[in-house]
Length: 242
Image 1 (cartoon, helix red, strand yellow):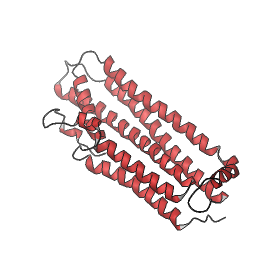
Image 2 (cartoon, rainbow, N blue to C red):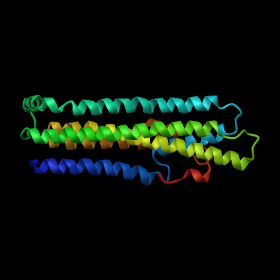
Image 3 (tube, rainbow, N blue to C red):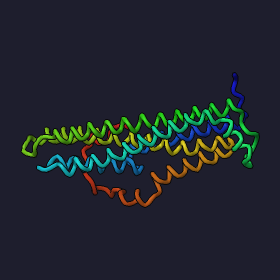
Image 4 (cartoon, rainbow, N blue to C red):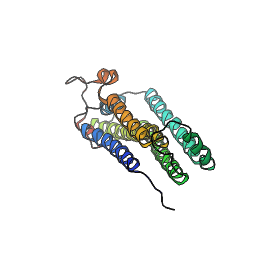
C-alpha cells in the first residue's frame, strides 16, 4: 500500500534531515579551529592523558575513564528501551490515531499506514542511537586498556608520548561516538512532533537545532573551557580529523 504524505510532510522531513546534517557538518568544520565545546574538551582529553602517561600511579585516570564509560552504558540501555517502546506502539496504532484526532492539530490526522511509517522511523533513530552508544562504550573500554598499558615514566620519552597519544585518540573517538548518540536522542524529540503535525515537526526541529548549536558555541560551559593562547599545550597530532 502506498503511503500518502502531504507536501508539508515532505518539507518537514527535508528540514529534519538537513538540520541534522547541518549540525553534524558544522561540528566537523569548526573542529578545525577547535571552536565547539566538544572539540575544546577533546583538547583537554589529550592534555589529561599526556599528563597521566608521566605519572607512576594511574588508577585515578582509569577511574575517570570508567565514569565516562558508565554514562554511555546508561544511554545505551535507555536507547534500547526506547527502541522497544517504539516497536510496542504498533498494536495500539488505532488508539494513537484516536488520541491525535482529539488534539487541535494543524491539518488532517494521518492514516494508519502513515502512523506506522512514522513509528518505524522513530525506531530507526533509537536503533542508531543504541549502536552509537554501545560502540562508544566499547571504545572507552579500549581506552582503559591503552591507559593501563602505557609504559612507566622511566621509558624513553618518544615511547611514552606514542602510548599517551594512542590512549587519547581512542578516548576522543569514544567521545565522538557518544556525542552522535546524544545528537540522535535530541533529534528524536523533534521527530515526535511529526505525530502531531508537520508544522509542529518543523518547529521542534528548528528548536532542537538552535538549542544544540547554542550549547556548543554560546554556553557558559564553553566560556569556561575556552583556551587562551598558550593555556594548554597539546601535541600537534591532536588536531586529527573527526
